[in-house]
Length: 539
Image (cartoon, rainbow, N blue to C red; front, side, top):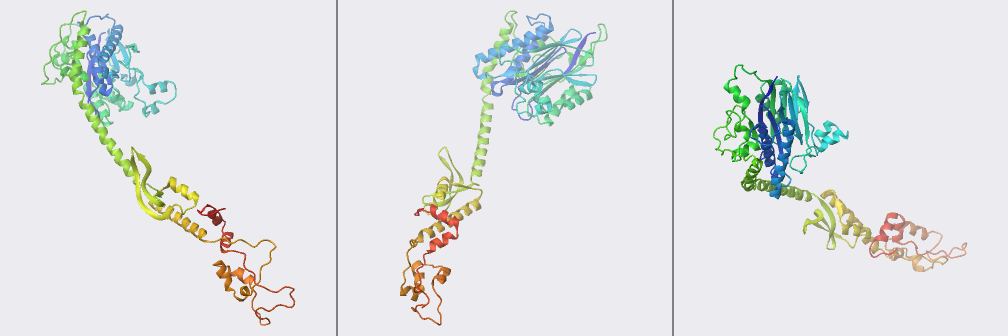
């Protein structure tokens, strides 16, 4: 039994990217997906070179093939890596470009040689059951393998796109290489992560099993990815294994012949052909294929494509060198075109930074704090910070509160600034500081009188007993309670200045020893602490 592949390939730039870095190739015995990486570092070149190099497996004119599909596929992948590294060596600004590669090569009648590196994927639908036959070479897959995270957590992991292996990044190629059995009725899906990252596994399974025609299935998968966000380039190949007609049977129709034999090139590789890159040698070996028409996709040729000169005759000993020189010759015009992308990105960054700056400045102007402005307390609008010599705050209002009139502890707070949660909070802070200044002023204005020494006898004078109001004049504000206790009440049985015969000493009116300031302090412990911190006072 001889098996062959019926296939369809589609590629879409996606909804976000401005260029397609994916490349794809499909024929009756070879399927290749390559997802370029590097952004400005020309990931599209890496993927196109990889696809072009592997597509040579389809051409009998390609030299150096051993006839062993597994070995030939391995060597072609490594040759693509060598070519990419050579381009980077001659163009250091391209350092960082690379590509994934996932390929299936028909090996005999019932086996497929399978090569894989990176995070593009290969699936097989057999008997209605879909399984992933490739393993992602990513950081999150390593975490899954080590049991550190689950597959569900991997889908949301911030480093889910971090590749551990790729083509073009090193001189050595760590490739997954194996042989798969092939059965009639098998359906294969090769895709970039722009599809697998945005379409759930269940949707992939239902779409692949629900559409009999590969073209309809491939197109539907692209639409699912776009509806899922389409933030990356999207490329997929759907291929069905079927039994070829035995020799001597009725030949297929012309439409079926084209359907089966025309190779399909999509993505960046197809764009390179349209821009004058040498056509794939595989195309020239297929009956009915037109190498000058890079827009051919399946049964639908793209008309009006600019003519592309046929590939130069290849020297058996220098075929790969000539092809590499052609790739390098294309770099110069592509490099001139590449300035457009950095300009757009730079402009976008300027707009974003301007928006962030405006938003940040607006936020600062909603903040307030209290600090010194000269000798006065002031409310500041903004944040107490300067950026590149530019102050991010200004005086909102200067208040009639002097810093020197505050307790020393509050002076240090004002000097270092007091953060407020709002303008209302800032005004409340100023009100508190004003009350403290007033209290300190009252403490400073109150004289402190020395108390009578122990054992001394208060002096008696007629004026002190005759004029009770003299106590008030001596101390400013006398305590009514102290005055009542010190001054005897008048009696009808005695006169002013008379003595009591029963008393051994004369009755006199002593001068109060309690000063107004000590009277206030004795009733308020906080005021005593405040008095110790107020300027101009001593403990």
